[in-house]
Image (cartoon, rainbow, N blue to C red; front, side, top):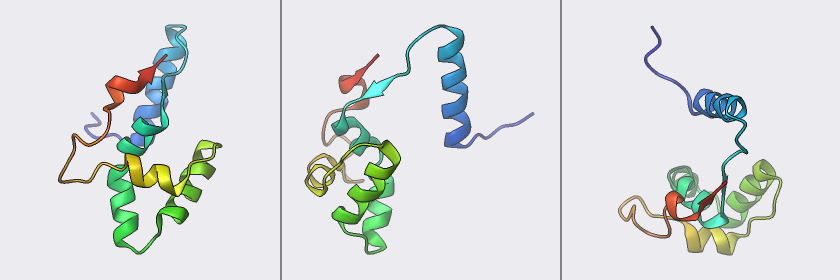
Length: 93
């Protein structure tokens, strides 16, 4: 029995369950997306990437324009997980 799953597998399973239930995909405001990606943003910053570079990567993946200012404003530092709105507060269907 499989005991661990990658984030991609979980996302795929969630998509399949939503489709089976005839539910629209979950959507999130920019603030929540940046908050959810803060761990990865922290890693990239420590590796020397600028917020402009990080915003560009996020924009490519999201097929939307995310700015360095948004990365800086909505980033939730690891020592402050309560920074910014939670995904539950800004999630919509």
